[in-house]
Image (cartoon, rainbow, N blue to C red; front, side, top):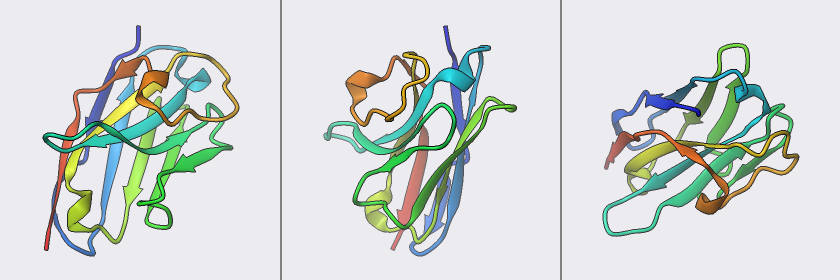
Length: 127
């Protein structure tokens, strides 16, 4: 069982930055692919970014490429999402997720590929 706790959300002006963190419990964190997703009311949860167990491979949604960076610190059981040049359309609840299939080389980008989810953190970008 893995528990995920997100933090770092908040209100920011367009063009600003935020850094989300996701702290994971469990000794097998370092073997899992980790992902970030986001959701707005009335819409499906969408993929934002993912990182392989080693940190060597990352995937990003086209809408955030060049602005967001996913990273991880396996010693701290934590994954991060650095969000720069934020836009009002980035406003959403952001969720951290873990794929418990160990040592996957290519990070999955679909919600069905993830087994554990955090409770979410709200990010609001004002225009």
